[in-house]
Image 1 (cartoon, helix red, strand yellow):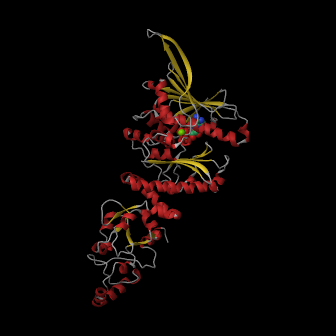
Image 2 (spheres, helix red, strand yellow):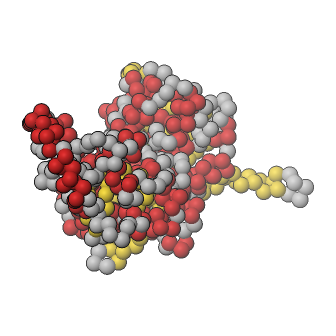
Image 3 (cartoon, protein in one colour):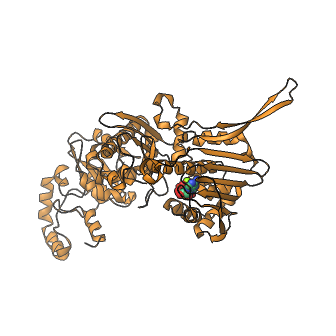
Length: 555
Ligand code: ADP
Ligand code: MG
């Protein structure tokens, strides 16, 4: 037997789990079953693709057992299993960036922190919400030795060599005193049906069946081993046969998010390539949304066999909040990562999936604007990134973006802007900057206000990078207000300017002299109504904001 120290973050997480006030404790079962299912997926994949595992015969299944005397609950699987190093690595440290950022977000306030658990898949350690001791006995497929990992939380855990007949993992929870509910068959069955009905593998459990005589006395009791989940992959079921509740449950199962998804889209394609996709848009943003090492939300299957959940190329990065699955018929099972990334079947699926998701969002915008606003509040910034790197879908993306406006409250789309345009207005105008209030009062838009022309107020960092490149929407040019073209477009009063030029000739010369290298030119303009002066850039120069950015980057 050997003693080991938990990584500090683990101790921190365990402490939170043990003192958790979180009301939805039952999710620990979802986490353990999902780990068992992952382990079966991994072994399944190896037996299909790896010579050394091909001969291995096994029945993929998960078994749940209750022991009322000992007050234990155990979850066993015939999956890949873990050897000694893997037990230490997987159950003694936290590798996932998601969990690390979860911990960074903790406030120290137990109540608040507990509610964060629900938004986060905290995995194996969540079992300490209901157990004060856990034993994990595991034997790696293809290896002889088996090990037991055990812990009563705290700072340490133990590992000892044990014997186990076949490969797989068996996890035993010693339930806390007030967690007896998890010793009841029906309680467990309900939780399994709720979260794990559609994992691909069957889950079995013993059920006691009693029969009674006419007087109500127990005549006999018999124990039957029953399958308690459906064990069919939800996405293979016909759309018309799936209830909204089932779609939602499946979402929670794959996303570890306890809130309902905003929308889902289930597609079976049977054209050149055959595949099924089931995508979800979450209603709350994941915590790693703006992290480089975000966890991708789409799992890849080939003919129902799980391949990977760690492939960022399945969807473009600006759709990184989308959760779901892609199940392809026309891929070999043993696709390597390199092959995946340049595979033309996957490329075609990706392309069609992006179009599908964007069109679903467009119809959400048209049909349920409240819901769409909720989506936009969470993910609008991310979607805008697409305008920068997905040129093919520019049109579709421009239908999705919303803006603040100089003329109205709330957000406006480009379509709405165009519909409200003045008859002789030539372009769509926008101003970029960091602060909505400053933009609203900018001298650069005075003339537009005076002429009752709407200006879009772009106050997010990404706007200044993205919008100068957009060019046009539905054949109407999109221009920044500080572009020198604009004087002509909004009909500068030529006569007045000429007159002013004469009157103020001397002062103009003087100003040019003083500003010398700081300004290219000093001109009379009619674009201002209240302010004395403003800065504009030459239409042949890069956008002013762009210049600022180049400066920041040291150029
Ligand atoms: P996650 O499943 O998100 O990786 P968990 O905390 O749930 O995080 O599990 C940590 C790791 O422990 C898993 O990635 C896996 O490698 C390992 N593990 C947990 N349960 C099992 C199991 N039943 N069989 C094999 N490995 C397991
Ligand atoms: Mg897990």
